[in-house]
Length: 119
Image (cartoon, rainbow, N blue to C red; front, top):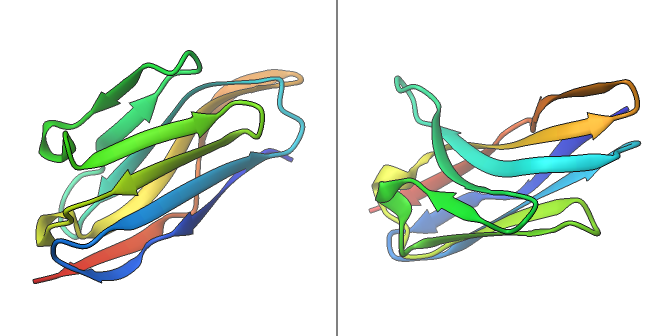
């Protein structure tokens, strides 16, 4: 059974840092793009950052220069270092990955982890 498990998140003051991690488990043949999305109350889910299997990354304009996404293909993990956090970064953060397993290729989501930035 393939699943994504997130860790990290929590409560931090503005200007602080947090690190989110995501681990894929199960019988996995290949993971394509891995990314982080977030959803704040009353808002739509939005892409924060993503990284391809080749290591090419893409960021939302609002987090460029503050967040850094990385992945370890051998361990099927992805992480995101979040620095200079702002109250506007408060949201539930979800890990996302396109995973090829025996018999299928589809998108998976983590359960979500809360990030709260106080002013």
